[in-house]
Length: 392
Image (cartoon, rainbow, N blue to C red; front, side, top):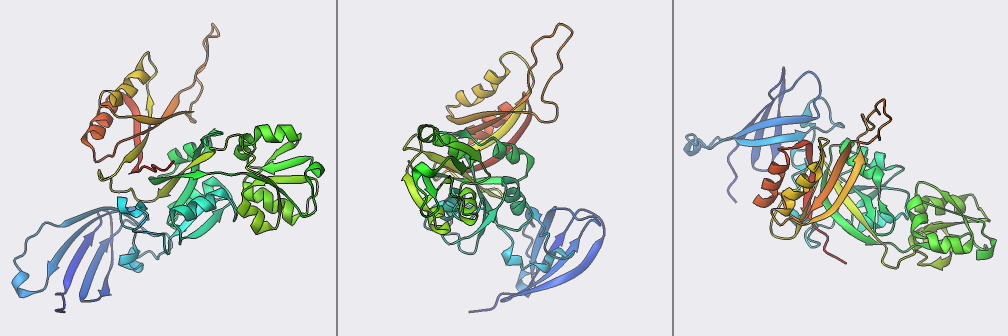
């Protein structure tokens, strides 16, 4: 094999003072890196890179510089951003990542909410079979772990076919600057479990996540059990096992029962056998949208108050034959409630609207719809464009 000519990549930052150049040695390639950085650390760095060959016959090469926007810095690295191996920086995600045959998540660190045995852990391993699943005590923690480069992805629930939307995660999507790069539908089978020797008639109460308790409403009512909400289904199983609680059971997965040594007293206790939870896969960088398979796009927007404004907003999709699969409204947090007047008129909320629609941002029709929506939306953000999970 003929060695490649040594090349120089000059990287400039539009702000402030210079920091020392650094050379990175790669096989057959020598890279001279020159950086300019603002004295304050910016999370996102715009980069301009030009590649020049040292070969004599390439001296007249005048190819256009390569533009690489918004490469995030690694908080764990030193103040010289290039302390991290250049090839290990995250690349934009492609649609082949979720084909099921190209990537199995090897070496990826994937955050989920809960403790081992949680449904979110099972969903994370379904998305990335060979990943390192990283438990987080709260949804907020999982979002922050991705933002701070502690993990590569997060797999978090967004809605359930019985319990409805998980509003906390809708609010966190708006608060954090992460991208939706995939979705996953996961069949949930709840079990009622207790410590060894505890019988069904010994139980007075049951512990689980509020969504799980709501999904088993009919069964728990028939059993006459007092519901106690905790942060996580598997966490409930862990608690009664470690505390050796004898008058309470937990609603969790069969995997949690196995991990914490509990006996399953009843299986499939959810009110509907078709109990499906939809999970979102979150990353720092957006996916490159494609048209080779069905895609879904998620957005959030707000509107001025007025008659027919929401109708006009949704009409931009209907006019282009774009199917909406989800509409969710959430009150604005900064000034959610308008003051009433002296006549004690009805108070009302301002809202954010979350919408999922079946189209890729690579489709001209989707681009035109959002361009149309921006004409009267006071705020609009694309949360992600990603392959649909078409499984049933």
